[in-house]
Length: 90
Length: 90
Length: 90
Length: 90
Image 1 (cartoon, helix red, strand yellow):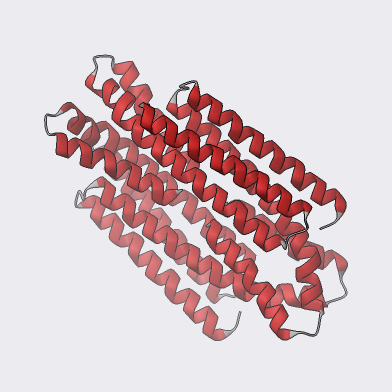
Image 2 (cartoon, chains in turn purple, blue, brown, yellow):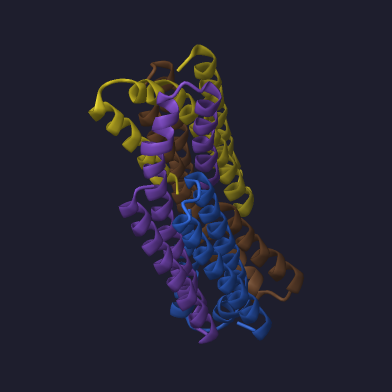
């Protein structure tokens, strides 16, 4: 991961962690359940965006290098990983 | 939300926030992208479980009270909220 | 389910089935993979809308009747079913 | 897409379309709402598997060819498409 992307990913993760801490306080303050669930869904959506950012970088670096490389096993492994994370998010 | 549930929800949220902070360090340490994405998906799954726990409590308290109550507008509002969070998670 | 809703649900399901048959033909005609995946995602989104429509009706009829009724076991069962479908879609 | 994969994809899509037609009849026969929703979720899961199968094939053919090729614009386009379908399914 290049430096700019890594910093962006770290910043978004820090923001997501802060958001979750905020939801913790909402629950302690007895906030209405549906509002809490909506905030949790917002964090999940923000985390999705982080995953997409990481996947994008991964495709442009590791996957591209593996596919252009000579190691068929490595190529196979790298492609299989993509479908495995896709499968999970579905 | 009763005290036991609230404590369980807060504990799970604290654990999810800690997990996200851990992922932040993984990214700073240049962990393999796919492993990072899988950890993000694990946090999202943990957050889903928190939402289900909150929804369960909400159905047994607020929704039950509203449906047993006399206020038709309130009943309508409470039912609409359930479908709205369902819609979002789909 | 009242007649109007049932007809709307059946109509949407018939349309989704037709959409899937159309995707089948796209694959036979060797359509570009990504375009096929996007059509599959469109069908899934359409099916989500059907689920929301059915859930909405279910909350207003069966769930409301059970919660207003005297049978605690039935009430419990009906609420548990809501969280179980929520859990699955997450 | 090679012939074996195409046939497998078409077969699974035909089965999904048949499943949706079956759900249509369930609704006409006034099947319990929650059972209908669970069947819809089963179709959606089956469609996910079809998407994963198509993505797998796509990565091994078009994406591999583009990444090994000389056209930078084509490479960029192909990688962007992967993140775009990933984004949608999240």
